[in-house]
Image (cartoon, rainbow, N blue to C red; front, side):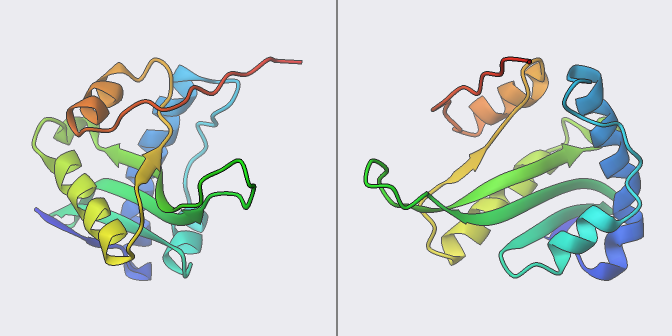
Length: 153
């Protein structure tokens, strides 16, 4: 198992996992998440970005895990303590490869990425109903600091 930064050459191999991830999210929240088939546009944008990266976990020639991380800044309001931080946007491990430490390896890479940039913390949003993922985040010392609520119009 290898965890490394994705390159443009990895995009085709990433698409099946991202498609699986999108379908899972759409099953949990169909009003907000699309079960679209990933054809490479999303990872290409991230790989070419200066402020973001995709880490991938590769077994043989198969991408079995991925993590999109992006560098962010808090808004410049006087009511907000300024921070430079990382945000995990997408994080997936193939259902067939869970409980093998792959997610832990991807989180470790994300932490190293953030430390190398002297960032203050890593933040992520997890979907309500994603109990397995939420237990994983709890076990990796991510704490709940806010809750997003929506009112459908």
